[in-house]
Length: 408
Image 1 (cartoon, rainbow, N blue to C red):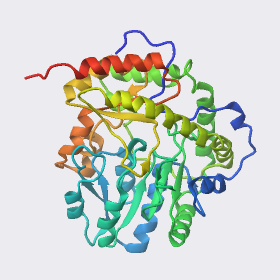
Image 2: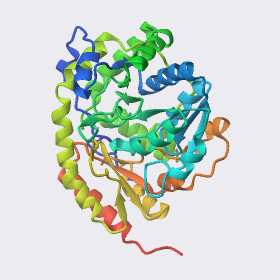
Image 3: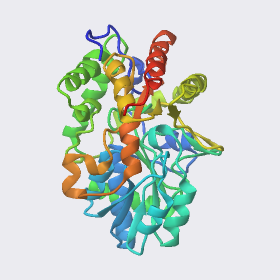
Image 4: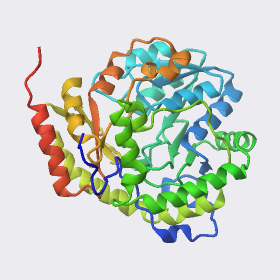
């Protein structure tokens, strides 16, 4: 880690840079313009991606009565929190080797007559194999909910992710591209499910002025600080403090409590997002163009594997996910780059069973591929604020570390 705080800070993800005039709105519904963007007849804004998942699970449970939910063993811990919040049974499935997709044999074993839903994850904007999950889940009458929290704008063919399965959700949290500070979108191509989700949301997520006022203040603060010269105050300093005390979970913000706020997404914040949405397609296109040039250079480093999309899919590029050959090399790279203000970070620190606070929910699991991904992956920001000189510094460190000889 750099001994001196950088003068400017690159964010770990490529979030859409805010503009002050976005705040000058009397409030507009986000549902209609977002439905146009996604190509759907209807979209349900929620107070968070986690809230979207809670609403979907509660509604689907009422329809089927089933209780088991299958999730990847490497995903956001909030997914596990959401399942537990609904009083449902969490089943962890390992990943396929060197993949973000489910292990096929493991998924087959976990899907049975009590399976309510399977949740494939479009991890880090990459596009998961939803078709394989659909075949397995639908064979036993289970639903498929696509976790597209980090993938707003990603597509399978010409259609948005989130629409291949029975339902999907996106996050509008800070750092996720388009943001309302905290917010989410719940989608489904099925009109019957859309009505069920709306009814469940009215029951579970009423208006809570206190929460909304807090989120409005946080969104204004985000607009003030989300710039290279000031991001160090809100992001860089807390990150480096956590790294100095040896707390990587706090460094990436993986320390989630059990409480899940449920309330409506206010009209003013929806209006802010509606104004920003006009710039999102061009921003995503610029990020993709930058990613196409830079991912080739990253993937060319011997000993580093870049996680990419399958043919026929087009993910978003908030950051690059890179796997090194072992934990020692990954940690050696992070020792030089994490905390240096260059936008290098980690995604989720552990596989789900290895978070201490999730142990009461999960117990012990054998998930070697998920653990290997957690142990060997780091992320490199695709923010437009990561200029060529800084990107070259990252490349140089990765090349040196990847070339280190194997240890006995």
